[in-house]
Every structure is written in structure tokens, then in C-alpha cells.
Length: 251
Image (cartoon, rainbow, N blue to C red; front, side):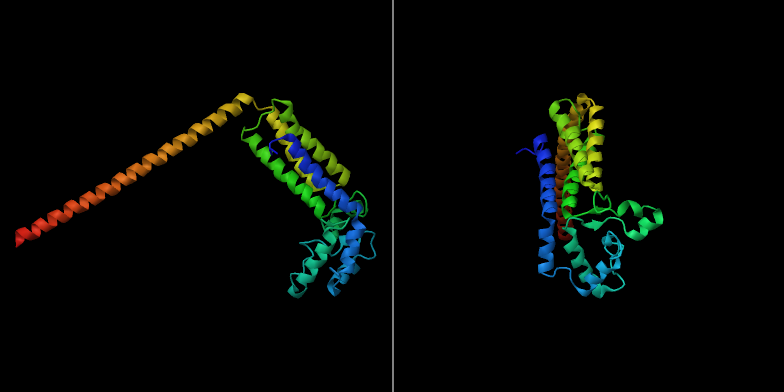
């Protein structure tokens, strides 16, 4: 299937979100699997869970991947990472911002809900968002370089349509990273609508001419270098012959 096909772009996003939705619905199975194999159940991992046990959302405390990393106690780093991985693919996932930062900014009250919480993402949310951000940034770069123009329904579906789909999924799953990807995609689409197709055509034509000219330039430079090398060899031979003749004359 052609990756430039808007249907392919939509399938990638919907497919990734389906995986996320399936994992969310079967989150208890994943949780039970982690418990059964004691993944993340070290003494340090139990201490991490105990930090916020008095709160409605205990993972706001001690679970932020960067802020709470025990860098001062390297012997606990592996236990920390293992516990984080065990939580990453559960329904709730991990916090983006730690409770300490939210508390000082007055936003903690908005992140205490277990449902529709924009401060938590799991591994499947990250998978969907990564695809969206990569695709959106690629489209936006093309639009800013005047390499993208919206002139057909297919072009509209590839940018505005995919971006709208990502936006809807982002709000329904409270995924801030997917929201970034959707914003990039929509911005690329609106920029492409303002770019004339003739500008894109002549830019591509100019790029092709420039590449062809560059190839010829390299060939000319290579020929000049070869000529210089050959000339140097000839000069060395002439100088060698003169030196030998001079030596014979002295004899």
C-alpha cells in the first residue's frame, strides 16, 4: 500500500488507537499478568506505591520518569525502571508532570481524576502519539518549504482529514501528545491550502535542475582534479628527466 495514500495514514492512526483501546479494555489482564510474575514488585517498587497511597491517584507521587528517578541512589535505579515499565502499559499509565510541580502551580486538583486525565499516558497512548507527531512534523516541514499544496480531495483528506481524526481521538482519550500531532497535521493542512500548486511545481522543478547541475559540477571538479594529477605526474617526469640529463652532463 502506498504510504502517500490518505487511507493508509488514517489506518495507521486508527490501528494504533485500536490497540490502545483494546489494551485499555483488557487492562485488568495486563495488571494481573504483572502481579503474577512479580514485575515491579520489588521493595523499592512497593515504596513508590506507598508514597501516594493516601491520594485518589497515587501515581502522581514517586512515578514521574525523570523527576523521581533515584539518581542519588543508583542501586535502586533498576527497581525504579522495572516498576515504571510495569505501570506504563496499564490503563492509567504514568504521569507527565509530578505532583510537586502541579501542587505549586495550582493544577493538582485537575489531575486527581482517574477518568479523562490529561496528565497521564500509557505506552499505547505514546505509540499513537509518536506516529501522529512524526507524520504531522513531516507534513508541516513540507508545507513550510512550499512542497505541499492542497488541490484535491485526496490532499485534503491526507492533511485536514487525518488531523481532524487525530484531534477527535486526542480529546476522547485525553492524550496531550496526540493533540500535538493533530495540531501539527492541521497546521500543515492550512498552510498547504495557502500555497499555490504552481509554486510547488516550480520548486520541485528547480530542485531537480539544481541536483542535475550539482552532478555535472561534481563531474567537472573530478575532471579538473584528474587533469591536475596527470599534469603533476608529467611535471615530475620532466623534472626527473632534466635531473638525469644534468647528472650525465656533469659526468
